[in-house]
Length: 226
Ligand SMILES: Nc1ncnc2c1ncn2[C@@H]1O[C@H](COP(=O)(O)OP(=O)(O)OP(=O)(O)O)[C@@H](O)[C@H]1O
Ligand SMILES: [Mg+2]
Image (cartoon, rainbow, N blue to C red):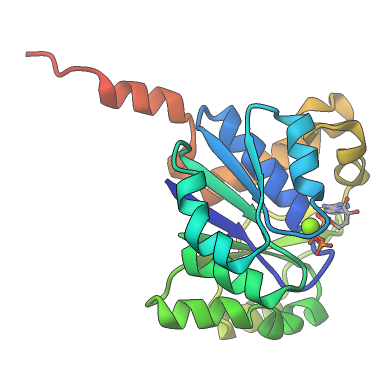
């Protein structure tokens, strides 16, 4: 089982939007998935229950519960996607102590990238204690249509020793509308086609090993031909 934490202690950067889409995408790839909603607002667990009811949804906020119970509660699943809180440093710390990898959504501006130093302090503490784990990647979120990643931002991210995913999540009304429609973007028809292609590309980039889970498992289980 792999635990993926979506974490950035800054609020409103797109954590829940990314976490719900990632959990539903992993489910679509044929994996057994748990979404651990570690935020007080519990918006992502409600959204996933409506958008992909076969994903197991848990609400876990207490740091002790995250460390002691999360691995056990999710033991029948292949992936846990944990939606981190906007504040609650102790909850984030607990999450990053059990996570195998972390995705750090960050709005695409120099100010936000600079704020990442403070917003990822807990992540770096965990990496220091755990010899570099969890591995983390920045995903730029709410990116304007004609945005180009500047050298300044590359350098700021490099100083934090965090790679930036090549695929961005663009600023699109359809992402903001999706929870109200109780759906993920690839269920929202032609209006959401570009968003659907973008998240699919992003998750292929972040988790190439998760693509087509059922097929590859089935192939692995096939008896060898003698
Ligand atoms: N790519 C996007 N384009 C347009 N709107 C977006 C996008 N991503 C997220 N939003 C909207 O921005 C707001 C904040 O997003 P979200 O709730 O995912 O952030 P968060 O980091 O989980 O916030 P919090 O820290 O409060 O939990 C929401 O209203 C959401 O619908
Ligand atoms: Mg949230």
